[in-house]
Amino acid sequence: MGKKIYLSPERRIAPHGKYWGMELYEHDLCGDIAQKTGAALTKAGFQVKVQDDPALTMEARVAEAVKWGADCYLPIHTNASTNGTKEGTARGPLVLAYNHPTSLAACKAVYEALLEIYPEKSKGRGVQINSTFYEIIRTPMLSVYPEIAFHDNGVDAKWLSQNRQAIAEALCKGLCNYYGVQQGNEPAQDLLQELERERALRALAEEKLARIQQILD
Ligand SMILES: [Zn+2]
Image (cartoon, rainbow, N blue to C red; front, side, top):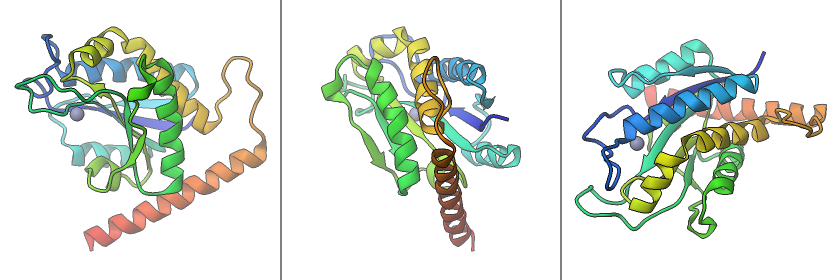
């Protein structure tokens, strides 16, 4: 059985997250990318749940992911550097990680796959640790939190809207690379690598769970 990936695209509907110069909003685009990513992941052998209901809070989504037994929690967002009244100048992909080497490694794999398809590599923002977002610190499993590009910048907004399938495939490829899922003619990873990854993922989950328990106590 493949790993279980829970997808949580931006839940806030319009007017949140207007794409610069377009009648397009973050919830709609991220929901579309989540469906496409889900399809690609399913094809690659993962088990997938896409939760795109705007009425479901982050708390409810995380609870659902836990109950379902998700191995990986994947929010999908696009970014903004302004309040939307003027065009933002910030651009490029970014992936937010939990402060743990295992999370950083998985986020790096997804970031690198995104940067492969993003046209201006020098604008890439890399992997950054985030210690506040609910879907990062309250998920007791691996979380990978991509901010794919900036929707309040006209060039990025256009790229986002025109490259949904490629973005979905990049997110899938990043997770395949991290989990050692064989693609095309690539040689299979060896068992030792797989055991190492499983050990690292368990250590991450234990640390996250311990921190969550501290918060709840
Ligand atoms: Zn968002």
